[in-house]
Image (cartoon, rainbow, N blue to C red):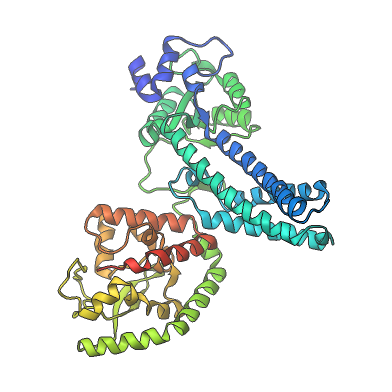
Length: 494
């Protein structure tokens, strides 16, 4: 049984809720002063959207002043350019929304996705220009102004994004920005859900519990249903969780019906049993709930676009690199005896086995039950091999694997089969990396997790980056990774 002591409440809901237990609010008041001191994360997203809208409009007017009014000394109408700017600002907001650039997880991340930001801006501008052309109004807008506007917008929005993300991270770290979560339900269920949230999210979430009508006198709750509805109307919460036993069907239906008209995200938590596997949502099948273990990777939905990009890059690369291939082949042959190419079995998409191609850089060609990773100053590495590995040239033949459809230019790096099997024993989620084609480069590689995996933590961090890539794939992310690879290519491996 759960204890009803103030110390338990303080542990679960923090000092703000404990303060409320000691000094219960008057009827009609929502939450506590301490809890209201933090801002819901949704407010920060709205402010960012408004600021970006104003940035687009401001850059348009500034570009008009500098280019049209000052440079060309034109008397062009302000209304026309302001209208085009408002249209682009609205289109850009939709584009960023659809590409996930307003997801709080992405905004709270330490990396600014400049590639996706600029790509979204260019796509939005092309859409607006296409509309102007379709309605035969493109001639009223100066092409020089468009170019000046695009440059100023790209720089300004990138700076706005970078600064906003820095402020969001600082606000979360200092407790000024939090996931504001309300739980309504029975005491035992609400208390256990609150405890789990506190354990997993810590101070990044502010949790307040509301009771059903018969339980509102309990000091654990900050109010009842009517109080929660007023709090939702005042925009106090990012999320509301209904925590009622699954057997209490009538009360679940009543609460969901009462809260169904509000825009706040509503979640049901009616079963407190811990699942054996992680889930990614739920679906209804014939009236039954089915938890989703994982969805079809987005790259599989857009497989044609990704495949076309792979074929284009691999074909162009092999043609341009043909002289390099010839020189490397001659150098390997003159340096040591053995084949030019090194082949090793790897696990690809859906765990199919394929032979990966590399330029041979070592005196051994291990491909059995035990494969020893290369280490710094490894004696097995040849003289030419040391140069090839230092500049990552040994990886170039994998463009052949890309053309054969066994690999992609971007994806999780494949390991030797022996290593894959060992890593799967350590991490339950490791095999999920094979839901997509392996890549020549990947999100983990451009983030610094490449080369030897010395410790389980090295494997875990690489796996987490690979899974992030799979879950957040877009063609723009692929393009960004390819661009970033150019900067880390020369670092090589040993």
